[in-house]
Image (cartoon, rainbow, N blue to C red; front, side, top):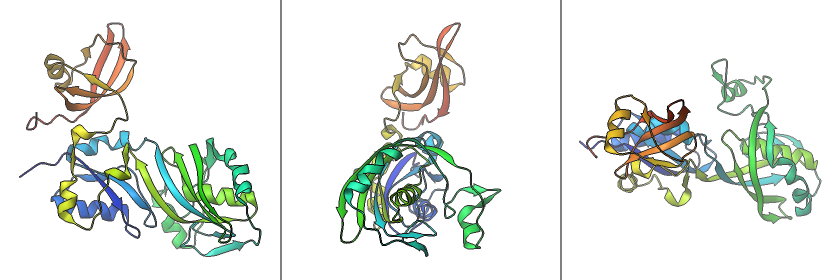
Length: 296
């Protein structure tokens, strides 16, 4: 039986949870060791990176990557969920112009603070916030730091008081909260009606596959050598490979700066390593072992 160690980049459909996608991939590949690199709400569509087998060891690195979203922003109403699926809690008759939006966007680019929405998967005291929200319980949430690298208005519909925005951001950013905050600043309120992730964990929507055909999903499998270029490579020879695979630290004569690297040997990925400086010089330690003897 073939062993699958790698990735499936799914174009997640609307109204399907991320854990449901993982469950489906487990069934298609008949595997238990499957996970994803970043949750998408059921409302959202787009890139969901599924990791199989040894690739699950890379999730902690993939989760920290930049993400890009296209979101639909509707003005004039605030909802309890901050999106189209919630109950309207406030309304405004104020008409927004595109110049109004352009005038405030710079306030949200850079390092900002966000308060996580109650309808989110964040855990507090072992319980997810959306579970509390469904019980009618609202608790105080601490603000969190996130980074917005760019916000672009893709289109604006004055008559329907809505626009599409493209947001490039760090992991942990709540687009619903961003839209709600912008609406509050404009004095018109706003909610998110649609969300599509087009870039996540080093993969794009062009890498993705729909879930409606199991065979096509299998054909879209990417092995570990397709690990995205989220960090630089360090190439090691066979002797160094033997050292680090046995848990030892190897001295390397390289010009690379200390940090995390993709370790390769003979054009095959070995794992994720940490290059650090000691009194002996630059040393390499294998952090995540991804080497597959059957394929190398």
